Image 1: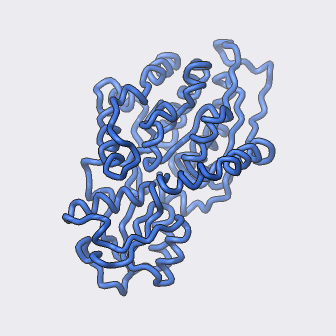
Image 2 (image 1 turned 135 degrees about the vertical axis):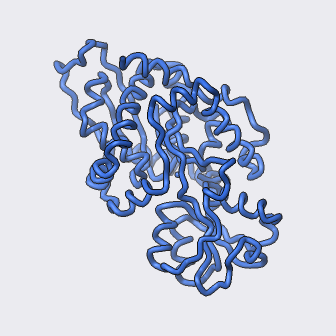
Image 3 (image 1 turned 60 degrees about the horizontal axis):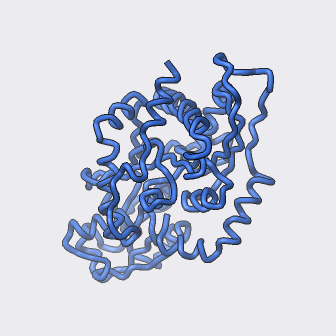
Amino acid sequence: MNPIRSLGKAIARTGLALAGAASLYLSAAWVVPTDAHAQPAAARPRVSLNIGYIDTSINGVGVIAAANKLDLWNKAGIDVKLIPFTNGPTQIQAMAAGSLDVGYVGGGAVWMPASGQAVLITPNEKTFGDFLLARPDSNIKTVKDLRGRKVGVPDGGSGEMILTLALEAAGMTMKDIQRIPLDPPNVVSAFVAGQIDAAAIFSPLANQIRDRLPATVVVANNKDFPKTEFVGAWVASKQAMSGKPEAVQRFLEVWQQVNDYRIKNPRDVVALASAASGAPAAQLQGQVDALEWWPSSQILADNKSGLTRQRFVSMQELFVKLGRIKTPVAPEAFINTELYERAMESRK
């Protein structure tokens, strides 16, 4: 809601990945037209931002579509280029190349800012959309039943995270199962075809499996592990944070308004996101049903109390177990809460 090995492959294909990003700029970038005479009330000088988002995620395209509908970019004095991506890691790569300022990453990719590759500027959601599923004919009912069985899981990402937590709780490790690494869409096809016995996968792919095989057994879910929340976030490049913090702050002003709007109007945001991206409304609504959004004022309070930082400390501990980072770092090293507070103050 992001891989180590997948990322390795992606880095090996850096030229291809960045060429793809460039192609998005040339052909698929969503450029929001602006009126040079339509200055916001405070008449602030206009700023520019390149913003990425995941076009199949309600947490990505939902934010973008709602901001467009409410004309918030123009009201905040931002000239934006909005660029669709399929996942978080490729956005981080684009940031490293200097072609992206802000983007959304799901919980499985939060290890990347934690490793110093970007700066986390606001948590976005807590998800309950990660599942360890078993085929109806597998006779698998509990995690211990997975011993020796074939479990499909994408390398890295939140599927691997939920699998690790489930195995650990059962006193098991990856060595106790036949771990079958698959690309996310292939997990669905392999599961339905009976090529694997179980799958560790995230929504909306988990929903696709359960729709196609309604008797699928839910072996584990995020709700089984309340001490480790899976939190997605919006992040900014280091270059944007140092070179145009005012623009990043204005993004947060827009995000805060969208965040509170979507909490009150989730079905409207689902409809807007579906129309903008072509993703089925039912798929996007399924994501909404499996997450929690916090009011913007609550996020501010959590930032001040230290709860926001604690959430990511818990995630780092899991990332260390997965080998994505060597040691946890102080949350202040990759989380900036000052701009969020300034954005809230600016909106008063």
